[in-house]
Image (cartoon, rainbow, N blue to C red; front, side, top):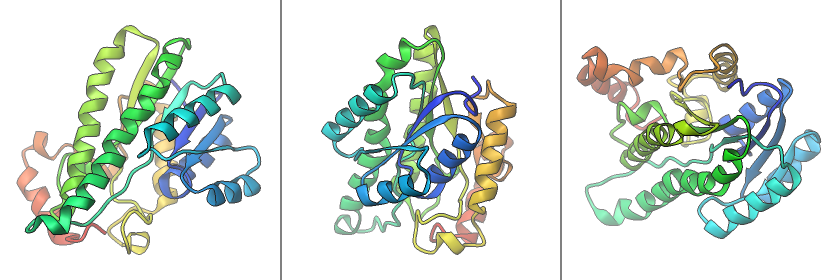
Length: 255
């Protein structure tokens, strides 16, 4: 499915970073786009600057909020046929002592794993009734090659990858396709300092390459920009240990 034009797309987690830039890029391609986020003030600011983009308040850590947002979106945009489950957080953690990591780990798993699950649950029945629909998940290169500083994040994105693989199998008998976006480190505020990190890919370059891949490879199961290939296929190439050592030496704090 070509999700770069003539679709109605909901992007929760799109008040900044990759989510917002991707939403704007998809709108520029001719899609109807709705974005979601927790902060009403940010949504209002984005709507004022981009009045052709719809907004809805949604907190994916709150099941009731997800249900209310889904009802709102579907009532206003009954043609909705693409969900991009973008919301996610990343934390540097020290797992030597539980008091230093447990709260962080629970927050990461709730946002990054339960969030997409709740969103998919809220929209999958509607999507099954559409002639052509797509669920887009967002994992990470760190799902395949871990960064020592971010254990819960790595694990959450590995879970998203396997969830994507499994859903694709289960929904193969429906009109719903499942596409997984696998970002490398990108210059966003995901971690302190990441916006200016030389290790990370410039945001505009990343989103431009993602949209081009979506346009030219409409049947792709994974959206892999060139810079994430090193991590994604390290184990298959047989250089996994070398890649793990290299990324942890080059970027020990995840930025």
